[in-house]
Image 1 (tube, one colour):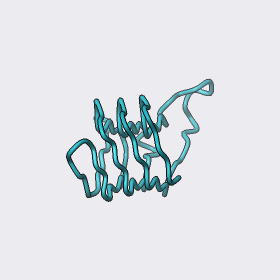
Image 2: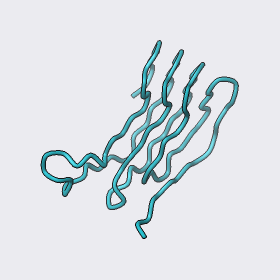
Image 3: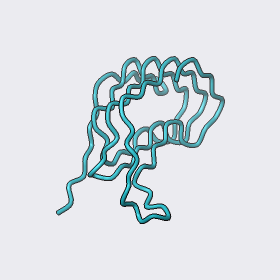
Image 4: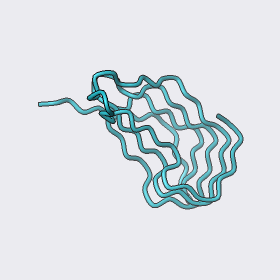
Length: 106
């Protein structure tokens, strides 16, 4: 997805993949290799909220040239691998790099 202008959004990038649903959660969705680029956002509640089951983590999401003037929260991550940030500006800070956050059950 590319070239978006957003005035205000609660969860700008939201992946709720650990939802159990009516079938009990035995068939998790798989999301991989997704690119979001050239977004301009006035205000976001949460910039990126990614929740996935350990058996099927969210992998390979890239945020490229994203400018967010104001955000209440930046990242909420559970079982997200290789979240790539390229020229992501949140407020007055630029973020570049890669994040991975996985939860291992005891």
